[in-house]
Length: 288
Ligand SMILES: C[C@@](CO)(OP(=O)(O)O)[C@H](O)COP(=O)(O)OP(=O)(O)OC[C@H]1O[C@@H](n2ccc(N)nc2=O)[C@H](O)[C@@H]1O
Ligand SMILES: Nc1ncnc2c1ncn2[C@@H]1O[C@H](COP(=O)(O)OP(=O)(O)O)[C@@H](O)[C@H]1O
Image (cartoon, rainbow, N blue to C red; front, side, top):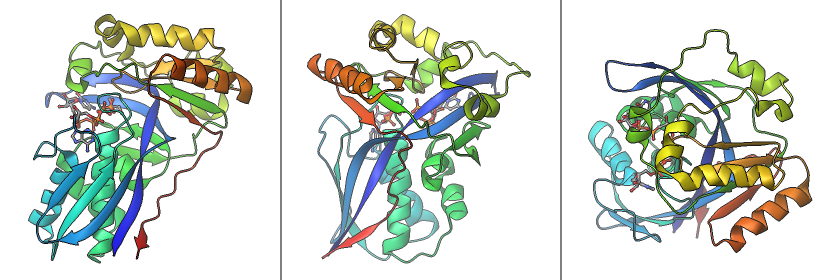
Protein backbone atom coordinates (compact mmCIF):
# COMPACT_ATOMS: atom_id res chain seq x y z
CA UNK A 1 0.00 0.00 0.00
CA UNK A 2 1.25 3.50 -0.81
CA UNK A 3 0.09 7.12 -0.81
CA UNK A 4 -0.01 9.41 -3.84
CA UNK A 5 -0.38 13.18 -4.30
CA UNK A 6 0.70 15.99 -6.63
CA UNK A 7 3.09 18.90 -6.09
CA UNK A 8 2.26 21.98 -8.18
CA UNK A 9 4.37 24.80 -9.62
CA UNK A 10 3.64 28.48 -8.99
CA UNK A 11 4.20 31.71 -10.83
CA UNK A 12 4.62 35.18 -9.37
CA UNK A 13 2.19 37.86 -10.56
CA UNK A 14 4.36 40.91 -9.92
CA UNK A 15 7.30 40.81 -7.51
CA UNK A 16 8.23 44.00 -5.70
CA UNK A 17 11.46 44.08 -3.74
CA UNK A 18 10.78 46.73 -1.10
CA UNK A 19 13.81 46.57 1.16
CA UNK A 20 17.10 44.78 1.81
CA UNK A 21 16.96 43.34 5.37
CA UNK A 22 19.92 42.94 7.78
CA UNK A 23 19.40 39.15 7.62
CA UNK A 24 20.40 39.18 3.93
CA UNK A 25 16.79 38.48 2.94
CA UNK A 26 14.52 41.04 1.22
CA UNK A 27 11.08 42.32 2.12
CA UNK A 28 8.83 41.67 -0.86
CA UNK A 29 5.26 41.76 -2.08
CA UNK A 30 4.18 39.26 -4.72
CA UNK A 31 1.11 37.52 -6.11
CA UNK A 32 1.21 33.71 -6.01
CA UNK A 33 -0.91 31.52 -8.26
CA UNK A 34 -0.75 27.95 -9.53
CA UNK A 35 0.19 26.23 -12.75
CA UNK A 36 -1.11 22.91 -13.95
CA UNK A 37 2.61 21.84 -14.02
CA UNK A 38 3.15 19.15 -11.39
CA UNK A 39 5.50 16.56 -9.87
CA UNK A 40 3.93 13.25 -8.78
CA UNK A 41 4.68 11.75 -5.36
CA UNK A 42 4.32 8.15 -4.23
CA UNK A 43 5.26 7.28 -0.63
CA UNK A 44 5.38 3.82 0.93
CA UNK A 45 6.79 2.36 4.14
CA UNK A 46 10.36 1.02 3.89
CA UNK A 47 13.10 -0.30 6.16
CA UNK A 48 15.07 2.96 5.78
CA UNK A 49 14.49 6.46 4.39
CA UNK A 50 14.97 6.51 0.59
CA UNK A 51 14.43 9.23 -2.01
CA UNK A 52 14.17 8.44 -5.74
CA UNK A 53 13.74 11.21 -8.33
CA UNK A 54 13.08 10.68 -12.03
CA UNK A 55 15.41 13.66 -12.75
CA UNK A 56 18.97 12.55 -11.98
CA UNK A 57 20.39 16.08 -12.18
CA UNK A 58 18.72 16.99 -8.85
CA UNK A 59 20.61 15.81 -5.74
CA UNK A 60 18.94 13.20 -3.52
CA UNK A 61 21.18 13.91 -0.52
CA UNK A 62 20.73 16.38 2.38
CA UNK A 63 20.56 19.24 -0.17
CA UNK A 64 17.18 18.01 -1.36
CA UNK A 65 14.30 19.91 0.18
CA UNK A 66 12.28 16.68 0.46
CA UNK A 67 14.95 15.19 2.75
CA UNK A 68 15.13 18.46 4.67
CA UNK A 69 11.36 18.34 5.25
CA UNK A 70 11.64 14.73 6.49
CA UNK A 71 14.48 15.77 8.87
CA UNK A 72 12.40 18.61 10.30
CA UNK A 73 9.58 16.18 11.15
CA UNK A 74 12.00 13.60 12.59
CA UNK A 75 13.71 16.24 14.74
CA UNK A 76 10.74 18.22 16.06
CA UNK A 77 7.83 15.76 15.98
CA UNK A 78 9.29 12.28 15.52
CA UNK A 79 8.30 9.77 12.83
CA UNK A 80 7.36 6.18 13.70
CA UNK A 81 8.37 4.63 10.36
CA UNK A 82 10.80 5.00 7.47
CA UNK A 83 9.60 5.64 3.91
CA UNK A 84 10.56 5.31 0.26
CA UNK A 85 9.62 8.57 -1.46
CA UNK A 86 9.44 8.38 -5.27
CA UNK A 87 8.98 11.55 -7.26
CA UNK A 88 8.27 11.94 -10.97
CA UNK A 89 9.88 15.37 -11.53
CA UNK A 90 8.27 17.43 -14.28
CA UNK A 91 8.75 20.97 -12.89
CA UNK A 92 12.15 22.31 -14.02
CA UNK A 93 14.54 23.31 -11.18
CA UNK A 94 16.11 26.77 -10.93
CA UNK A 95 13.22 28.15 -12.94
CA UNK A 96 11.38 30.38 -10.43
CA UNK A 97 8.53 27.86 -10.45
CA UNK A 98 9.02 26.88 -6.79
CA UNK A 99 9.47 23.17 -7.52
CA UNK A 100 11.73 22.49 -4.51
CA UNK A 101 9.53 24.49 -2.09
CA UNK A 102 6.40 22.79 -3.41
CA UNK A 103 8.00 19.36 -2.91
CA UNK A 104 9.01 20.27 0.68
CA UNK A 105 5.47 21.42 1.49
CA UNK A 106 3.90 18.26 0.05
CA UNK A 107 6.35 16.05 1.98
CA UNK A 108 5.24 17.72 5.24
CA UNK A 109 1.54 17.40 4.33
CA UNK A 110 1.81 13.76 3.22
CA UNK A 111 3.80 12.52 6.23
CA UNK A 112 1.44 14.45 8.55
CA UNK A 113 -1.44 12.48 7.03
CA UNK A 114 0.30 9.09 6.72
CA UNK A 115 1.61 9.13 10.30
CA UNK A 116 -1.61 10.74 11.63
CA UNK A 117 0.43 13.44 13.37
CA UNK A 118 -2.59 15.75 13.61
CA UNK A 119 -0.61 18.90 12.77
CA UNK A 120 -2.57 21.90 11.41
CA UNK A 121 -1.39 23.91 8.39
CA UNK A 122 -0.20 26.59 10.83
CA UNK A 123 1.87 23.96 12.72
CA UNK A 124 3.41 22.80 9.43
CA UNK A 125 4.16 26.42 8.46
CA UNK A 126 5.95 26.93 11.82
CA UNK A 127 8.01 23.79 11.19
CA UNK A 128 8.86 24.89 7.63
CA UNK A 129 10.55 28.10 8.81
CA UNK A 130 14.05 27.06 7.65
CA UNK A 131 13.00 25.28 4.46
CA UNK A 132 12.33 28.36 2.31
CA UNK A 133 10.31 31.56 2.09
CA UNK A 134 7.90 30.10 -0.49
CA UNK A 135 6.99 26.96 1.48
CA UNK A 136 4.07 28.46 3.52
CA UNK A 137 2.24 29.37 0.29
CA UNK A 138 2.48 25.76 -0.88
CA UNK A 139 1.34 24.39 2.50
CA UNK A 140 -1.82 26.52 2.34
CA UNK A 141 -2.50 25.60 -1.28
CA UNK A 142 -4.45 28.82 -1.87
CA UNK A 143 -3.62 31.74 -4.14
CA UNK A 144 -2.77 35.05 -2.48
CA UNK A 145 -0.35 37.90 -1.88
CA UNK A 146 2.96 37.03 -0.20
CA UNK A 147 4.40 39.68 2.13
CA UNK A 148 7.33 39.87 4.57
CA UNK A 149 9.99 37.69 2.96
CA UNK A 150 7.16 36.04 1.01
CA UNK A 151 6.04 33.75 3.84
CA UNK A 152 3.11 35.84 5.18
CA UNK A 153 0.20 34.97 2.89
CA UNK A 154 -2.97 36.97 2.55
CA UNK A 155 -5.31 34.56 0.79
CA UNK A 156 -7.27 36.12 -2.08
CA UNK A 157 -8.44 34.65 -5.35
CA UNK A 158 -5.98 35.88 -7.97
CA UNK A 159 -5.81 32.80 -10.21
CA UNK A 160 -6.11 34.42 -13.68
CA UNK A 161 -9.26 33.49 -15.56
CA UNK A 162 -7.06 33.39 -18.66
CA UNK A 163 -4.66 30.96 -20.32
CA UNK A 164 -1.12 30.88 -18.90
CA UNK A 165 1.73 29.52 -21.04
CA UNK A 166 5.04 29.07 -19.18
CA UNK A 167 8.40 28.16 -20.68
CA UNK A 168 11.78 27.18 -19.18
CA UNK A 169 14.64 28.31 -21.46
CA UNK A 170 16.82 25.34 -20.38
CA UNK A 171 19.17 27.57 -18.32
CA UNK A 172 18.88 27.71 -14.51
CA UNK A 173 18.83 30.99 -12.55
CA UNK A 174 20.09 31.29 -8.96
CA UNK A 175 17.68 32.79 -6.40
CA UNK A 176 20.40 34.27 -4.08
CA UNK A 177 22.10 35.91 -7.09
CA UNK A 178 18.83 37.35 -8.39
CA UNK A 179 18.25 39.09 -5.05
CA UNK A 180 21.90 40.14 -4.61
CA UNK A 181 21.96 42.07 -7.89
CA UNK A 182 18.47 43.62 -7.73
CA UNK A 183 17.74 47.23 -6.78
CA UNK A 184 15.12 47.46 -3.97
CA UNK A 185 12.35 49.79 -4.97
CA UNK A 186 9.96 50.89 -2.18
CA UNK A 187 6.83 52.34 -3.72
CA UNK A 188 4.25 53.15 -1.01
CA UNK A 189 1.58 54.15 -3.56
CA UNK A 190 1.53 50.85 -5.43
CA UNK A 191 -1.42 48.58 -4.50
CA UNK A 192 -0.67 45.07 -5.74
CA UNK A 193 -3.95 43.58 -4.52
CA UNK A 194 -5.98 46.24 -6.36
CA UNK A 195 -4.01 45.80 -9.58
CA UNK A 196 -4.46 42.00 -9.49
CA UNK A 197 -8.15 42.03 -8.59
CA UNK A 198 -9.51 45.20 -10.27
CA UNK A 199 -7.32 46.18 -13.23
CA UNK A 200 -7.88 44.67 -16.67
CA UNK A 201 -4.95 42.22 -17.25
CA UNK A 202 -4.39 44.01 -20.60
CA UNK A 203 -3.17 46.94 -18.48
CA UNK A 204 -0.74 44.83 -16.39
CA UNK A 205 1.93 45.29 -19.05
CA UNK A 206 2.23 48.94 -17.99
CA UNK A 207 1.95 48.55 -14.21
CA UNK A 208 2.83 45.03 -12.98
CA UNK A 209 6.58 44.38 -12.71
CA UNK A 210 9.01 41.80 -11.40
CA UNK A 211 11.89 43.75 -9.80
CA UNK A 212 14.24 40.76 -10.22
CA UNK A 213 13.74 40.68 -13.97
CA UNK A 214 16.16 43.35 -15.15
CA UNK A 215 19.29 42.02 -13.48
CA UNK A 216 18.45 38.39 -14.28
CA UNK A 217 17.92 39.27 -17.97
CA UNK A 218 21.43 40.78 -18.02
CA UNK A 219 22.91 37.45 -16.97
CA UNK A 220 20.34 35.08 -18.55
CA UNK A 221 19.65 36.69 -21.90
CA UNK A 222 17.53 33.80 -23.16
CA UNK A 223 14.90 34.72 -20.55
CA UNK A 224 14.68 38.29 -21.88
CA UNK A 225 14.39 36.96 -25.43
CA UNK A 226 11.63 34.61 -24.30
CA UNK A 227 9.62 37.50 -22.86
CA UNK A 228 9.79 39.30 -26.25
CA UNK A 229 8.79 36.06 -27.92
CA UNK A 230 5.64 35.82 -25.76
CA UNK A 231 4.52 39.27 -26.91
CA UNK A 232 5.20 38.25 -30.53
CA UNK A 233 2.98 35.21 -29.93
CA UNK A 234 0.16 37.56 -28.85
CA UNK A 235 0.34 37.47 -25.03
CA UNK A 236 -1.54 40.31 -23.32
CA UNK A 237 1.01 40.18 -20.48
CA UNK A 238 4.42 38.48 -20.12
CA UNK A 239 6.85 38.31 -17.21
CA UNK A 240 9.65 36.30 -15.68
CA UNK A 241 8.40 34.27 -12.71
CA UNK A 242 10.21 34.73 -9.35
CA UNK A 243 13.98 34.66 -9.70
CA UNK A 244 13.71 33.09 -13.17
CA UNK A 245 14.65 31.78 -15.52
CA UNK A 246 11.18 30.68 -16.66
CA UNK A 247 8.91 33.24 -18.33
CA UNK A 248 5.13 33.10 -18.70
CA UNK A 249 2.65 34.74 -21.01
CA UNK A 250 -1.04 35.37 -20.31
CA UNK A 251 -3.48 34.90 -23.19
CA UNK A 252 -7.14 35.70 -23.71
CA UNK A 253 -7.94 33.30 -26.53
CA UNK A 254 -7.36 29.55 -26.47
CA UNK A 255 -6.09 29.26 -30.07
CA UNK A 256 -3.50 32.03 -29.52
CA UNK A 257 -2.28 30.34 -26.31
CA UNK A 258 -2.13 26.89 -27.96
CA UNK A 259 -0.20 28.33 -30.91
CA UNK A 260 2.37 29.85 -28.50
CA UNK A 261 2.57 26.57 -26.56
CA UNK A 262 3.18 24.54 -29.73
CA UNK A 263 5.69 27.11 -31.04
CA UNK A 264 7.77 26.84 -27.85
CA UNK A 265 7.57 23.02 -27.81
CA UNK A 266 8.87 23.08 -31.42
CA UNK A 267 11.94 24.93 -30.06
CA UNK A 268 12.45 21.92 -27.71
CA UNK A 269 11.84 23.99 -24.57
CA UNK A 270 9.95 22.55 -21.54
CA UNK A 271 6.62 24.36 -21.73
CA UNK A 272 3.29 24.21 -19.89
CA UNK A 273 -0.19 25.45 -20.66
CA UNK A 274 -2.62 26.11 -17.80
CA UNK A 275 -6.37 26.52 -18.28
CA UNK A 276 -8.26 29.66 -17.17
CA UNK A 277 -9.16 29.57 -13.46
CA UNK A 278 -7.19 26.35 -12.85
CA UNK A 279 -7.27 25.03 -9.29
CA UNK A 280 -4.89 22.28 -8.03
CA UNK A 281 -6.01 18.98 -6.51
CA UNK A 282 -4.51 19.09 -3.02
CA UNK A 283 -5.83 15.61 -2.13
CA UNK A 284 -3.61 12.84 -0.71
CA UNK A 285 -4.87 9.42 -1.82
CA UNK A 286 -4.29 5.85 -0.70
CA UNK A 287 -3.22 3.41 -3.47
CA UNK A 288 -3.79 -0.31 -2.71
C1 LIG B 1 12.07 34.51 -5.75
C2 LIG B 1 10.96 33.69 -5.15
C3 LIG B 1 9.62 34.40 -5.44
O1 LIG B 1 8.51 33.62 -5.05
O2 LIG B 1 10.82 32.38 -5.68
P1 LIG B 1 11.74 31.44 -6.61
O3 LIG B 1 12.12 32.21 -7.81
O4 LIG B 1 12.94 31.03 -5.80
O5 LIG B 1 10.87 30.26 -6.96
C4 LIG B 1 11.13 33.61 -3.60
O6 LIG B 1 11.22 34.89 -3.04
C5 LIG B 1 12.30 32.78 -3.18
O7 LIG B 1 11.82 31.88 -2.26
P2 LIG B 1 12.65 30.55 -1.87
O8 LIG B 1 13.21 29.92 -3.12
O9 LIG B 1 11.77 29.71 -1.00
O10 LIG B 1 13.83 31.22 -1.10
P3 LIG B 1 14.73 30.72 0.11
O11 LIG B 1 15.15 29.30 -0.14
O12 LIG B 1 14.07 31.06 1.41
O13 LIG B 1 15.96 31.72 -0.04
C6 LIG B 1 17.01 31.52 -0.98
C7 LIG B 1 17.84 32.78 -0.98
O14 LIG B 1 17.12 33.81 -1.69
C8 LIG B 1 17.30 35.08 -1.08
N1 LIG B 1 15.99 35.63 -0.67
C9 LIG B 1 14.87 34.86 -0.67
C10 LIG B 1 13.64 35.40 -0.34
C11 LIG B 1 13.59 36.79 0.03
N2 LIG B 1 12.45 37.37 0.36
N3 LIG B 1 14.73 37.53 0.02
C12 LIG B 1 15.92 36.97 -0.34
O15 LIG B 1 16.94 37.66 -0.35
C13 LIG B 1 18.25 34.86 0.10
O16 LIG B 1 19.55 35.11 -0.37
C14 LIG B 1 18.09 33.37 0.40
O17 LIG B 1 19.26 32.81 0.98
N1 LIG C 1 12.97 18.55 -4.45
C1 LIG C 1 13.65 19.41 -5.22
N2 LIG C 1 13.21 19.69 -6.45
C2 LIG C 1 13.86 20.57 -7.24
N3 LIG C 1 15.00 21.20 -6.87
C3 LIG C 1 15.50 20.96 -5.65
C4 LIG C 1 14.83 20.06 -4.77
N4 LIG C 1 15.54 20.02 -3.63
C5 LIG C 1 16.58 20.84 -3.78
N5 LIG C 1 16.59 21.41 -5.00
C6 LIG C 1 17.58 22.38 -5.49
O1 LIG C 1 17.02 23.67 -5.33
C7 LIG C 1 17.48 24.55 -6.38
C8 LIG C 1 16.33 25.47 -6.79
O2 LIG C 1 15.31 24.68 -7.32
P1 LIG C 1 13.76 25.11 -7.31
O3 LIG C 1 13.25 25.22 -5.93
O4 LIG C 1 13.05 24.16 -8.20
O5 LIG C 1 13.86 26.46 -8.07
P2 LIG C 1 13.34 27.92 -7.83
O6 LIG C 1 13.87 28.39 -6.47
O7 LIG C 1 13.94 28.65 -8.94
O8 LIG C 1 11.87 27.89 -7.87
C9 LIG C 1 17.98 23.67 -7.49
O9 LIG C 1 19.33 24.01 -7.75
C10 LIG C 1 17.88 22.24 -6.99
O10 LIG C 1 19.07 21.49 -7.16
